Length: 111
Length: 113
Image 1 (cartoon, rainbow over the protein chains, first blue to last red):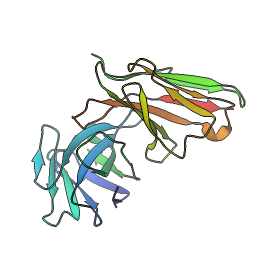
Image 2 (cartoon, chains in turn cyan, brown):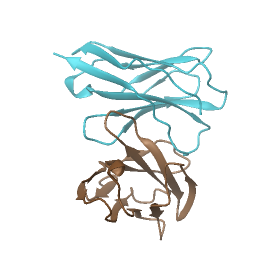
Image 3 (cartoon, rainbow over the protein chains, first blue to last red):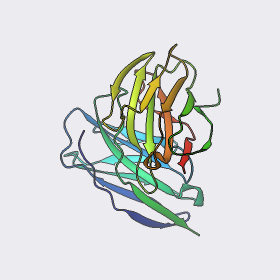
Image 4 (cartoon, rainbow over the protein chains, first blue to last red):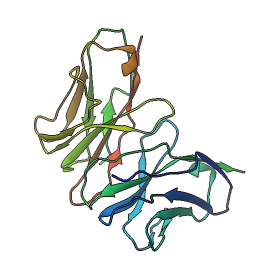
């Protein structure tokens, strides 16, 4: 699976949009981009995933560049409960094989 | 359905002892995964099952580690002759193929003293 690069930490003001970037310049055509987050002392939580089109669900939006070498996870109105480590993962195919987690981005939402 | 359940939540053991953790996946999920997470790091894959078949094992899964999923439902992860380096959070996840999102449990935190 392709490696990803994320900033180690970011801050965001409560109520503002949080934009979390991820670089995956070596992504292959059959690899999807997944985002998970991990709130302190809990297991990771699935957020969203996509192949090449932008995706939106009740939690977030995923914007993938046209060349697919990078993506951005957008939390439209961040709350204090969104403080967590966010992991960007690329994975082959649309099957349930294992996830390879990197270091992630520690997002701190501040009042 | 209450999600993926892991027991115990915490385990303290003396070096050299054997420990066993249990994972109950979401009902009817056919894939079950084990991960290990040390402080400040992302989770590392250990192994996964499809139904009762163990399909892949990481190099991290030394011969002191064994995982089973005897009836394709719950799974156990056993560590024999524990070492201090085994201290970590052990996470279990499940998914339903062909859906791809995995649902994680709260984990079992192991401390080897």
